[in-house]
Length: 193
Image (cartoon, helix red, strand yellow):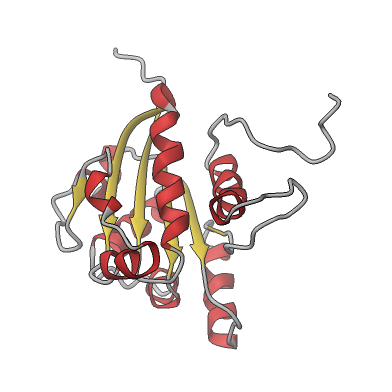
């Protein structure tokens, strides 16, 4: 039997503001090398337009992982038998959060999230909206009760980030930690350790 060393991961990018988080996530995942054995990417219908607007480039065309269309239910991770271990939705719109929280599998992103939850694997939603309505909070509670992790895109500043990308990286590093990857990042009060 073949031994697998890396993790199988799904990354979904929605049309929420915060394309910089997705860009940095892809850059960091690429550098993880053998920690990633397989990756599948989904862009929602609005994700590319938001990326174009916010980042002023078409960097999503250079993603080094297979990209699947939102309606492609033949993607391997549309079934639990493919054994993808982790799914990250980054950034996660409130609409996507609502559909996942309520089990509405109307596209590949929500179907993959449904599979991850039903198989008791790791789902991380990097929500990017403020303020939150009670509907948003209840949907976050539902996802959390189902076993998912809601990780708002809230940067930290104790590492003293100097650029917008460094600020966004504080969120992405936290997400990669939650996903179980071994990464080099700032750790609170460990400078002398």
